[in-house]
Image 1 (cartoon, rainbow, N blue to C red):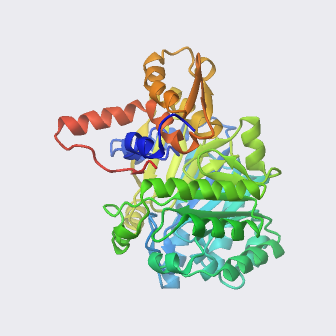
Image 2: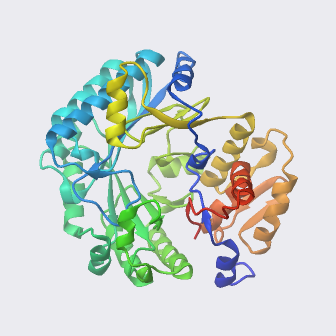
Length: 461
């Protein structure tokens, strides 16, 4: 542990920070990037460049109070079918720009709850994917699901369509916490969903846990982690709850007095970490864990781990094509995000038969690319050698800013090499933020306009 106490560290490193699933972060996205420019970026992709695909399905059967995702309840199957048709139409428009038969390395359905897509709709989408693209035999096909609302025949459908991984939320097993979050999910439901998927041939399993939820304690999160580890998922993602009621109105139903303070949150995080490592899981980056034989752990050990809008991944593709309302795409020239509202997304698709439903984005500068590479290595490897990744740039200012973190035992600096200590792992976003010049510029603009610090990101600790 560093020389400072935990309370001192919280005082110094509190506030809000991006999660750095990308750089530049979404805070830099503007309407200056539109459909026409993105079409040009897509046309410019090298002919043999492989791609990955992401489909966003913004529907759930019921809403959880803690959720910050872009999702809503869609009761009518006709609406879900129509949305599936829009996903296929957007994919067709993209393929018209990038060309057919590109190799696909990863396919992911997220949300929301993508298993709200009717089986017929999912079959059609997968058929279109295999028509438009060459799916790599080793490709990962992943589906998020809600154990409380998995249609009976869906696991068999996923196996039949070639899915290789499911990702499901658990968050916490304590009844009082579930009541406060509006999410009642038994251990048995979770266990049954995993077993059904495995029986159908979907062998990969990821489980999400959350700390910092209302009424959680160090003991309760440790008990949840231990019980979930008994199911032997290949991977776990352990997130700190992001309380952003100014962005998500449903979070206003959570009484703030029930939320643990920063010191308690850190203790909860440490307990989950202790339990999972004792159960044989290796820590990956900021908030993931994996069994040693899993590809994520192997990529982390080899230094080939990547990070994108879906979190940590083994996917090396520089191109991620996002489809659906609010979906984000990653291209060599920049990031782009679709229209967020489902109704507005559908209108945009209907009003023009050729254009893309782009709402905003950001074009990369050369400095963005350099700093994005540095930030990705920090987030993935807990270390970076600026002499190798920094392309000869001058980072003396950033190294000077890291000295207080070094004094607090959070990082070690050896010339141009920066490594984050085991104690400093919860503070990795603080290290990444030192290299985020766009964030500093946005803060200066806000201060110049007399707006003060806008809490547009989640809590740093």
